[in-house]
Image 1 (cartoon, rainbow, N blue to C red):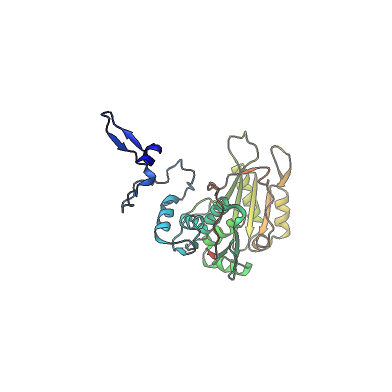
Image 2 (cartoon, helix red, strand yellow):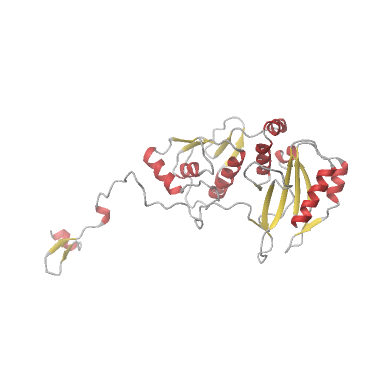
Length: 307
């Protein structure tokens, strides 16, 4: 009783009756029920919202993973969509495997994990790599020949994969008619501009010629876009390169650096690391994808990650 009194745990009611002060931390609490109403859905203003139609709150997946696994266990999501499950698993120190049917989902998840964990994770394709910060991607083309096979099997999957090589987002996420633009990159090189600049991308899996370059130039002018990119399996011909060069240059709004306004890239070049010429993220803010919040905590140790 003396200890409770000295600790300030004895209080008195208005009537002068002694009461024991109990802190919430000392109580066992209430077990989590089977109906959860304390986790809000991902609303339009949520920082974690990526625009994916069926996106779940990361707090929901964290609770499920914590209740059903231990650190070091493997979490499998065979329909991983925008990657909320594997994001939560990574944060909680679980190994994970994510599976989805589309190349679009893989690109979305890669962007999400890179935004959240920065350079802590490295993405590779091919054989298993035993490294705690390596994410192994299975199912993406690893050679131009495999890319050509994908283009023959499903041109939309090929387009989505090729757009991922340059960090572009598809214009239409559903299969439909080709309106001249397969993907876009949005950037803002002038902070005072009312809307971002556009880099428009066309992806061609078949034979290409100078007509394709002229058509893209027409779309470039119509859209008033900054830069146009034609991605193809076949190398461009001389007339195609001449037509592209005649489109001139885009000039950065603030530092006045110039970039070719119409650029031709093959899948082979992109796979070998030759990117597109565009304002860097240092000189321009990339607004192509909604950014996932960056993780403030140190990443848990991982053994094997697969996507």
